[in-house]
Structure formats: C-alpha cells, structure tokens
Image 1 (cartoon, rainbow, N blue to C red):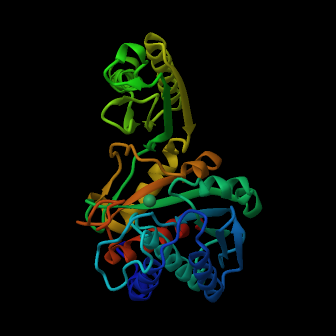
Image 2: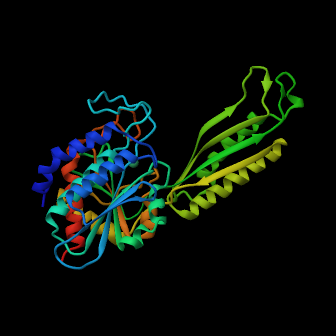
Image 3: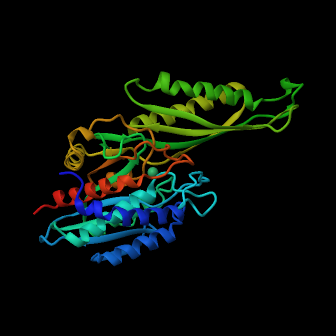
Length: 387
Ligand code: NI
C-alpha cells in the first residue's frame, strides 16, 4: 500500500501549518504559541479529549476509534526549536533572531497533526490513539517531564512510537534498527585549580593549562584503552578555557564536553574512568580538580518486536526496498528514550532528502515528506488497533 490518498490531499494544508510553525520557533519548555496552535487544531478536528500542560507545556489529544474497545497507543512528536540564527532565506523563515527550527520539529508536529486530522475523520480502528506533542526535546528532557507527569497511566498508553526526519536519507525512505538506535548522553565540566603567577617564573606556579592539556590527551584513552572495542563510546572535549594575558599563568582552567554511549554500563564505566584520569593527573601536578558530570538522556532503545512491527508498517507504506531495518545507531541523543523506558515501542527515521544537516542554520524540513509521515502514522494506528 503506497501513500494514502487522503494523506496526499492533506499535504498542502499540513505544509501550511508546518511553515507557520517554522516562522514562530520557540525554545525548550517555552513553546506556548506552538502548543496553543496544536491544541486549537486538535479541538477543531474533534478529538475526544485535548489536554494541555502535561509536562509543563506538552499537549495530548485522544481520538477514539469506531471499531469498539481496545488498547491505547501513543504517537509522539516534538515541538521545540534551537538557539540558532536561520540563514535559509525562505519566505516563512524564523521571525525571531536567535531561534530557528533547525531539527525539523516543526515538520514532526505538523505531520502528527495531519495524522490526527485523518484519524479523527476516519476512526477506522478500535481502542484509542493518543497523539503526544512534547516540549523541550533539545536538552530539556520534556519527554521525561511528560512521563513523570503520569501521562502513560492517565491515558492508559500501552505502546509508544516516535519519528525523526533524517537528512541524506531519500524522501519516501525509512530507517531503524532493533535495540539501541540513539545514544545515551552525559555532559561534563572539569575545573582545574592550580596556582597562578608570572609566566617567566613557572617554577613558582602550578600551571592548570599543562595539567588540563594532559587531561585532554589522556581522556582519549577512554575510547582507545578502557572501553571494549566492540562497544561504542564517544568522548568529545568541546570547550577549553584558561588565561587572559601573555605573561600570566592563570590559576584556573576549565574543560568541558560530552560522552555518548549505547549501553548503560559503558556510560558508567566511561564516567568513572574520567574521574580517575582527572584526579590522577591533577595529583601529579599538585593541582586540584572538580569533575562535574551531568547524566542526560538514556539510550533510545527500540523494543525488538516493536521495531519489527514499525519496520513492517514502513514497508507497507513505502515498499520493502525503501525501508532500512538494520542501520547503524546514531550517536546523537533523543529524549523519546524516556517514553521507551516507560513503554515498549519504536523510534524510526524518515528521509528528509538532500537537505542541510540537522542543527545547521541552512536546514529546513522538506514538505515533500509530509504524506509519507502521515501515511506511516495512520497505517501504524490502524494496524496496531485493528479489530
Ligand atoms: Ni530533533
């Protein structure tokens, strides 16, 4: 079964919503206009229930099928944008400097709204579908906030599905894998306290720059010497700040960055080794060190059965050769992981075609993707909730 006719008919209207949302990007939990737009549309479609303010600014719509009682499944989209200056020059480009939809969450929200419109019209399923619109995917754990707010229990959600666009994957194609599909993330800040002094008299100082430099090099051995080569780990140092003058050895240096892993135990081991390396090097220099590690999103883990189910749905929409069911995991993080920790389900990538990369100021969601995304959501619902 290719794209649904009704989904193709909805394309223009949904692209209009998408472009409107694109022009009003909002960050983290501060998605008030976007959430209000979602809420209005869901009421207009005649959803049986529309509940705002779940996980602060999340919105859930409930649509009951016409085929009798049955379970409830959840379909999730994210609503937030990124702190970037858009350079697309599109007529619907961000109207707010310093904010833009550079990850396509405008497209995810619009496609799920399109599916909600379709499903509220046709209701060709049993049980209920919960359309979930979450805030704060980009580092604010909005998905976790909605789960903590009791969303799964309140609406009786038993399975949950998510979707993200992927630049470089042709339009009309889908990709996923069973097991870990996106990485666990942790952000670290390492403060090295030495003893400042005259650059011409280094023997009277404890140079934090030399100690920090050794840490930068030694932290590379977490990937090369500590973690089993069969496992995946990324340790990237992305900040190195110290000093203000040519002739002063500063008293402090600070380095920071991110750790990405695909297994919980690997993340724990990497963090423990990071502390040991930094403390050991600091001691060798007579400096002191504070290692602050903020454990963020867990691994996005596709339940193996649900990944097969989601892959089969994608195949029925796109055709078998268009669906890649054993892609490599992506080392980015994704806070749909919290929903997948709470309920079985699967996360799938949908091709965005030849576009700029995610989080790039030239990125734009591809409106040609819309009917494919809507068809996937509708087919998934009608199959999962078949009578
Ligand atoms: Ni994203």
